[in-house]
Image (tube, rainbow, N blue to C red):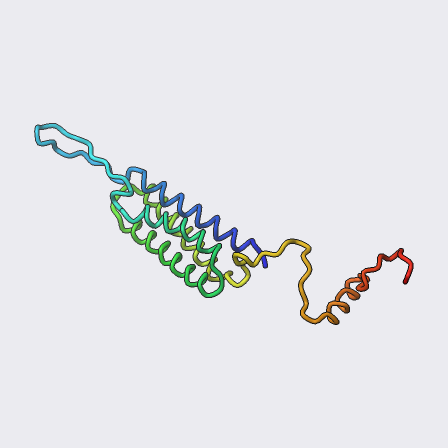
Length: 170
């Protein structure tokens, strides 16, 4: 099993979460309004105020990392679909919100990256390792049939009797 698709999904989700969270803290709207006592006051609103779902969607992307590592099979694919939908939602909310273009584009990019992470989870789930499915490098597989194990040892060029090659036969 290759770990590359899992690491790709993890990196995409981390990057997407950072972009969503970062855009939520930027100023999206800055306007001047009349003050009740006279004069003007500048009112600013951050991305988190304009689109309150940005931070929860970023948190969801981070939580999906732990779930992607822990799950396998169909459950991981369902997670991937949910993550992709969350990324699409982030894109739609950011694209339709009012505010400055660069922070909105940052949020849309974050949503697209989360969406891509979800697609990787769905598409490459079958080749991703599962939690607890790791074997130590070089660990021999157990075979239930002892006769088959002897033949496997011979095929690997090993002496199945356990005698070292330079030992005298008994």
